[in-house]
Image (cartoon, rainbow, N blue to C red; front, top):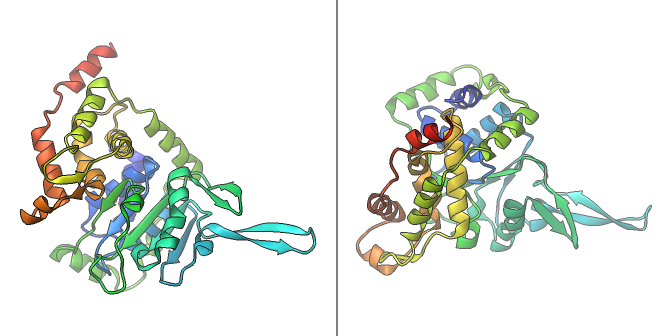
Length: 319
């Protein structure tokens, strides 16, 4: 693994025990300039993970605990009249930061959820007709409890589509539970998390990820995976071009973390369920067969031939 990324992951795992693969995937999403949705039951460390990443990556972070009375202006900001100038002055909202932690995003109104849409996609906000650029980098890390919990409402597909990946931390196993209990006997483990990269260094890593090569064969594989969801007998809404781009960007981040400057099919497969599952809308036939989106993604992967010898062809092309 890339040394700097490995150090970042190591710092975060000081406070998130037994979930190294999830930590790696959040790191990938940050490097790919993607937004992350952590969907899980309360108390498994979603917020702690976000704060640990912010600290290890030198990111300015702000947190909003979403409630039914959270207003869009709390997020994007608002204009106030300035009697000295006789005009209106922009007062920035919580979103003007590098890592915006949207805690329990599905506990607020649809209007407030929608206020995030432009920011997540365009990296800017518009208030009273004036557009303001967000800091670089800008990442939304949102948490939500399962939709069946009291006081929650499902995010619409248009909102879900803005998240590059959806991840679930899950309960820790026995050993991780023991580590959690024993590590909190004294000082807070968060105090031991150190900054590994500066903001400038992180921007440099993000630029390196963007330059990772995706060959024609790998792009063809991504397109065939996407098209396999179109017209699928269990799917009413397949993967759109935004989803295809998200898969390519996550695959680039995976390659970078493995120390390569080119993508191989295994990079695509490693992140496919996290990119695709929350974007698929299943039909009644899938529900009758008790299949969920992860099951459908597994079938798509199984039915889509993977290109071979990408490593060998890349080495041939560079010599």
